[in-house]
Length: 192
Length: 259
Image 1: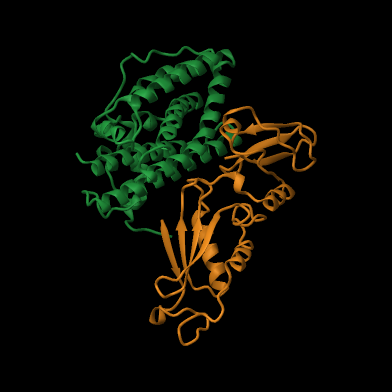
Image 2 (image 1 turned 90 degrees about the vertical axis):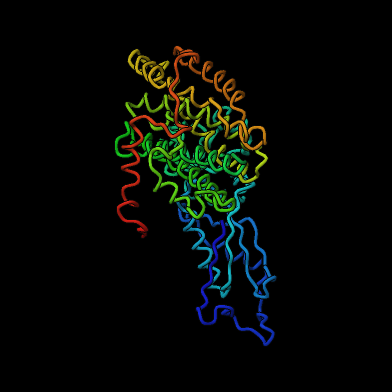
């Protein structure tokens, strides 16, 4: 699935908004690294403490120079097949890039390899914990999926005396747990 | 029938079963026995509808690329403007929700099949099929974990929950056999390495279901009993028409409506 986002006006559709020299080259081309930093400020709409980069939703950034027009190709992968935030995330990313002066953007949805919680960054995990969501425990191996319940630490008090209340929490990516020590319910971000 | 026609048909079956079960499960929202279960059912439904969207999007692509009869139709067109006889979902998924045990019995028998089917399709020779299956498999693993837990909890629970779960299994059983009846489409795609081998699926399913029902102290009916069939030819039970009438009302009454 490919969606093109182009915020240039129809009558000068082929001209980037950024100042160009006579050869049509952008005077400043943001580095890929700078764009990663930029996107790291785009929050996930359902868990706004983590960014789309923290979650591993942004898979790749490339400048495509083939058409003579510099186009940024952003490769994204959905977390869950039915995640209702997918389109919202695409628009938020396009908007952030446009705001930074990158007008010509192509968003590319990639399904394989399928998204895994193993891609959530260390800082993302810590942000989840501080927000009150227990981050995924261990890696998403088949044994984890079919085997015993993982030992999930309570994000409030740190106790390991916790119990699963439901396999699904407020969203498909989470399970609902309760801490037997502080008695608080909490969401656990499931390994997938 | 050429390979593209078979693939289109196969993708409709996959997409329709996911979508119809997703739609059925949504009927529990506002009615489930506990808030946690309502959220769980809603989330499972969402996964299934998301998978349906992937399958039907691919079906639409295949139809257009191969210039089949359905060329030019989008995934939404396929979902909302086909009539009952053009639907290819399994009969089991269109059955009414009944009580909670009925819903979980239907879900469990479907989940075991779905899990093994997507495992097989993850290795499909068609990489588009493999990608959707591998993604869905991760989600379905959690569906199966949950429905298995409910079968055990209700089967090996009180006298009443046991009786109700046994009734639910006995009632839905006649719709399970159809999942393993192969036709020309299945055979053509299995030989090409694109589709799943239904005989292999049948033995995996049987072993899992027998083991879990035994653990849940439930009697497992025989697979040799009379089984309902017909969905692969678009012959459905009376349940599907009512569901489609509700699901398709808006896009049919207000074509092209958007927000």
